[in-house]
Image (cartoon, rainbow, N blue to C red):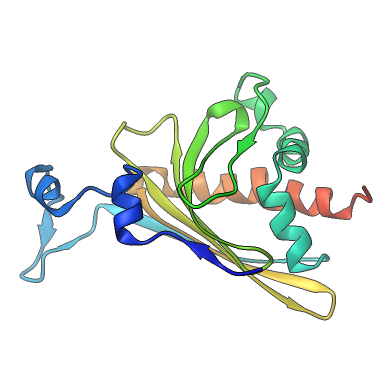
Length: 182
């Protein structure tokens, strides 16, 4: 299968990116130093190994029924008192997804089956204008998959909680789903 990704124009049309004129009117992050570098967003990097093929890992991350199983195994629905709304995952660039009872939402930016998944990603607890980027890079070797994960553009105050959440509510239950024979 070929990689599907969205161009800058596609992201603007889908409402994911703000066009340049609108961006000029949007509030700016406070720059630091002469280069205008903003230090208002944190980033997370995880490298996780799974005993499954990249195709299988990708399938669990992109199949609503399999992801629902991951959600159940994560215990997040009970611990966070989330509703029992099932996952919804669109598999087209620009398509949307809702996970964990709608608490996590976003849009698909790039879908390369068995290789890569890039999404806009946001938590319902964030201010309305905050959207981050989650990138899942999959590499197979000797019957295992190395998942290199980068989550950028997250609010600094959310970084510690999110890093813990990715481990507890994604990676640990994902390993359990992958171990199940379905």
